[in-house]
Image (cartoon, rainbow over all chains, first blue to last red; front, top):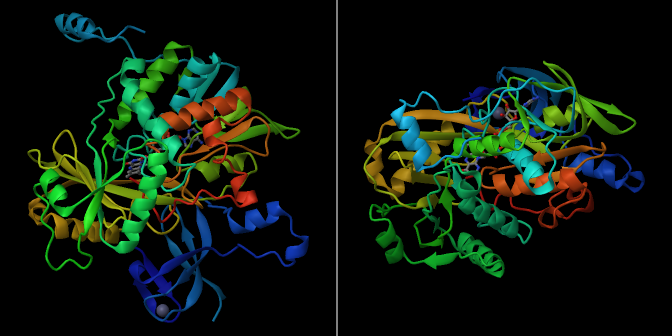
Length: 86
Length: 415
Ligand SMILES: Cc1cc2nc3c(=O)[nH]c(=O)nc-3n(C[C@H](O)[C@H](O)[C@H](O)COP(=O)(O)OP(=O)(O)OC[C@H]3O[C@@H](n4cnc5c(N)ncnc54)[C@H](O)[C@@H]3O)c2cc1C
Ligand SMILES: [Zn+2]
């Protein structure tokens, strides 16, 4: 059972959250000049790193805030990270 | 390789079972192979077996970082079925059932195939619609999938006694008679023995740490036992797909997620079929040949390589089970464990060439025990001929570029 540090509510049980996946995924700026391979990479591929990953979490059954944490996918150790969207 | 039979059993019984031959050699790696397969689970060992048997390619090594079947092959809940939604899925899974039903004989190795059948409970009109759609697709490929009424369920499963206050009452069921249970580690060992006897080198405790390439083509693998040269390299490392593909500079459309299972103490036979409750979450249970009730559900909802899972899955699945089988509240749990699934974006397996010449990937995906023989056979075909087997033409990586996904995720769960 993970305790996820919501920047608004503090440490809460993982059941209150949804994981939004890797935060490094960036939508290509100019679709017109983007190749199929680049789109496909953006849409479907992931780094899926074994180790510390920076990822989005959503406090969907709480304050509904989106925020970013660093989570180790082997040990499940979690550190808050600074990026956020409102 | 000595043949297993009633006579070999009797002969060895007379000598106190001390003279059984080793089932495979443990050779040192050669300097060079035609094909190196990374991963000694059912998929990798099976691919080596079919490379030798179907294509006459025997200068092959399987390299495994731990022991054979010690990954997900030895951790799964042994369920084999073909109730899928898409036209690319059904014939592929049907081939696997066909192969499983004849492999004990072909391999001269008892896979303990148990043809139990599987009942999925229908608890909403949406699930009913999907079940009927599946049944229609399956009938096109000759796979039987039929509706069961509540009295028919009760007749097959006498301990079925759903609570009257169930949130999603059970309206009926859908039944696949050919769904089976197959002894999981016997699959790895049977393929290993068959491959070894055809000349394949099986090398355990050999971890791949790099994939060497020259001008866009693979040249071999770096391992803790030195560099092994190879004309072709096939990857079948369920749970480590991204890690190994990354060694070849590739990114894959997968997320590695934990999948858990847990079993009760053994009890007398009460449950013949494999049953699925709340098919959206995929809570399922069955009784093993030993008498244990084996329980599982969908995977944990985030990436993890930890090989352990979150408690809420156990709690949730247990609640669902007790709504239908209240008498199981008295069962004591004996064991619990987790493995890892490389979940492709669309939930279907990936058997594919890659951008690196001579490097091929088999991503078992969500429920890759059931696909083991079909994946192994078609993967061997791809590696041997550098072209897809007709059944897996649409299961390659190109589907993520041309948009022709084989969407099974969210429709059918892992078991
Ligand atoms: C709890 C649980 C229940 C399941 N239940 C079912 C079920 O009922 N039905 C079903 O169809 N599927 C089920 N599955 C899924 C199924 O177990 C897997 O999809 C399948 O076993 C994958 O087989 P494989 O041979 O590809 O992988 P594995 O058996 O995992 O083999 C891969 C091997 O690669 C090795 N490896 C990894 N990295 C390296 C490296 N760098 N160098 C060398 N070797 C390496 C690993 O040690 C491992 O032995 C379940 C899975 C789990 C965890
Ligand atoms: Zn919050």
